[in-house]
Amino acid sequence: MLVYRLGPKRARLCSNTALGDPMTEGKTVLCLSALLFALTTVIASAQHRPTYPHPPAPAQPQASARMATQTRKSSMDNLQLEREARELSDLAKSVPPDIEQVKRGLLPKDTVEKLKRIEKLSKHLRGELAP
Image (tube, rainbow, N blue to C red; front, side):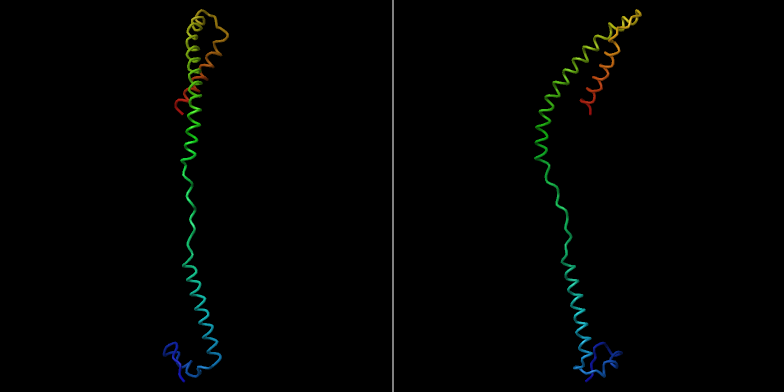
């Protein structure tokens, strides 16, 4: 019996084999199992879906807690800012008389400390109002 499996060129090689030949059946089983393995691998890889990371939780609950904290902190900050502004104003008002004494050749001992405190308060107020 002639077997044409692989086309006319290979027909000569297969023409001598019979269907019940154990060698031919072993090759056939090997080819079919390789084909089955290849198909299984392709199907398994086609079903693999990439896992994407979950999006972060919404920030609304934290934002509301943060707003409550900021409200409390801002009311305390407002009082502190008012105190510092009042102190800055008082210190600034006390500087012109000290400068008059400097013109006369006398330097009050707390003038330099007043100027340093004015500078510190003004920097702090500027930082709080325009961060």
